[in-house]
Amino acid sequence: MLCVMVFVYFLFYTINGERGLLKYLYLKKEIAQAQKIADQYNIQKTKLEDKVRLLSSSSLDLDMLEERARVVLNLVSDDEFVILDNSIEE
Image 1 (cartoon, rainbow, N blue to C red):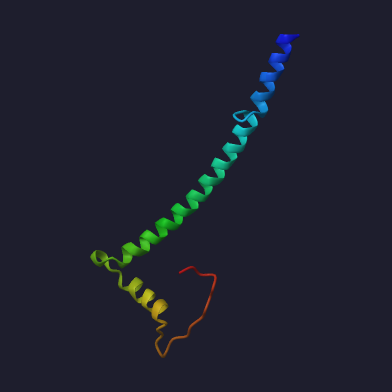
Image 2: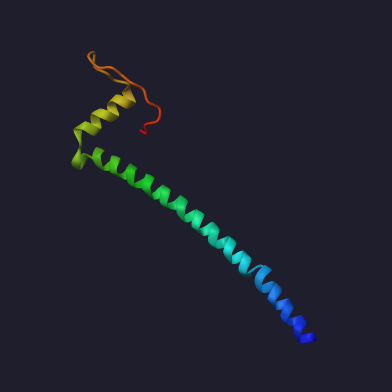
């Protein structure tokens, strides 16, 4: 009887304990969510690095420079129309 009780005790804490199976599954789910967020930040970082690369002095892209000047300084030519779209990311 004592052996059965010890076995049940260890079985219970193997499943429900601080380092048990349920905690392992919970932490695995948390890691997956954190990895998804990290991937989103890496994509955003890559986009920003590309924009910075286009504006660097060693390889200046004149179209990108003109686009940023228009956005930052609110510049428009007399023969142009402005259509504002808030869904486009800068």
